[in-house]
Image (cartoon, rainbow, N blue to C red; front, side):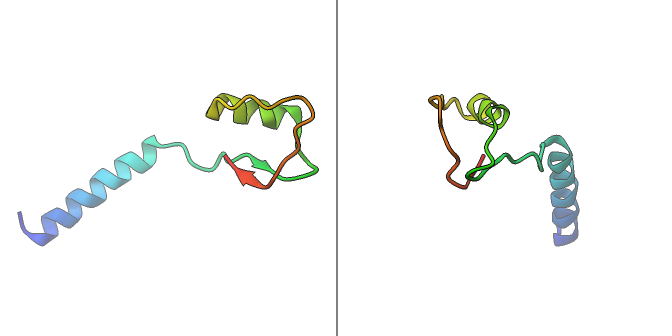
Length: 61
């Protein structure tokens, strides 16, 4: 396989995977603007259970 074929194959594969992956839905947890809905989303994504009264620390999930 020559270099041109490798580049084309790489572009096709990366385009396919880019279309399949879900980007752009970060949850920004920054004090003091943390809602219970945001904590619930983070808990679902990470499995972390936040205790009542939790405040944000500036992490991205």
